[in-house]
Length: 166
Image 1: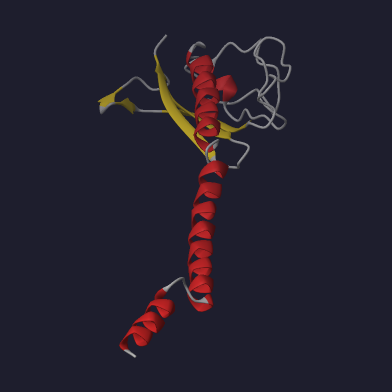
Image 2: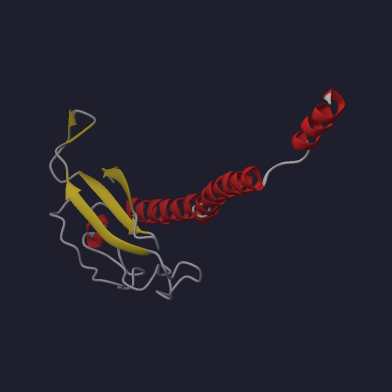
């Protein structure tokens, strides 16, 4: 009888039960769902750094364009409206209040720049400053320039620079 009970014990230990198999499938499915969710988020956000970098490049380019203009010394009153041509601009203060509504525009032709239709310059602010780096300057001889660019995602990129003297 002991040989028969030994054989019965061996028969019970082979394989897995249906409950164990179902439990294994549920655990593996939950783990896979979690992994796929994380991979989906990573893939969805992988373009974000490129979009932010492009918005920063647009903002820095506009800031440099403005800084290269003459500093009039007069009170800053912007002469450019939304989407206005910039090729005839001669002074830094002319850019105060400039913006774009349908994409980034070329400096010389005012045509939309291909690939940048979904970016907009939402605001350019040019304000007079009384000091730079803690050092007082002659009134009208220095300005702070702030350029804000909206990326396709709606995130705003802001760059600030200064222009002093001529």
